Image 1 (cartoon, rainbow over the protein chains, first blue to last red):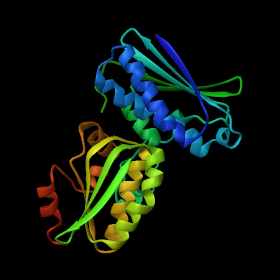
Image 2 (cartoon, rainbow over the protein chains, first blue to last red):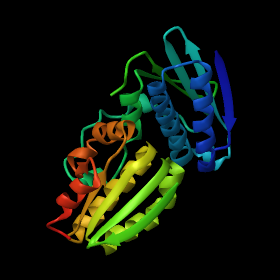
Image 3 (cartoon, rainbow over the protein chains, first blue to last red):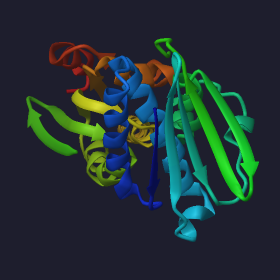
Image 4 (cartoon, each protein chain N blue to C red):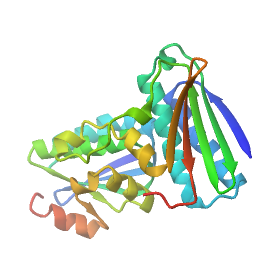
Length: 139
Length: 113
């Protein structure tokens, strides 16, 4: 089962994306613990694009695809902004102080923690981030 | 996303309800930061929060930082399993007290209230 959603690069779309993911998880009859992980990772990927990519500046739509394969789900988030590979970001180190922690930058770490695999490719002017969710329970 | 704030016996109880996604966290920033700056003993009740994004996580950490800088303290109360996983994964629960109920929150804030 595969479903696709195209959304405007706006925070107001995030709740609709969450509902769309919920519908997918129900239709695919996936365990409910999978729902939170997929919602979180898709939200983080989309929010990153809205906040940091020029896709939002140019008002370019963001494409989200969910595919249910044998024993796994693939979530692909694609945008036409500047090339950005989140898989190349530095390894997360837990913050040592509240001052350090309050600076944020947890999004990519949460995607790494709640998805089983994260892949990136740049193709035909699109950033394509694919997150794989296996049968595991996450962090 | 809803927020309510009440003061009882020197402790400020902030109740957040709903999905704390990035959009909601942006809206909660001003009210939560205001409480953190003005109050000393703060419990943030997360028992009705079903979702926590990284931006919302930063919001809670910023609140704790502001409270600490004013000599106060902020504790998180009763996050559900998924929200607790986010807090643990980012190391936030090593930096802000996370307690299971209001009684434990009052005990954690007793020295401040």
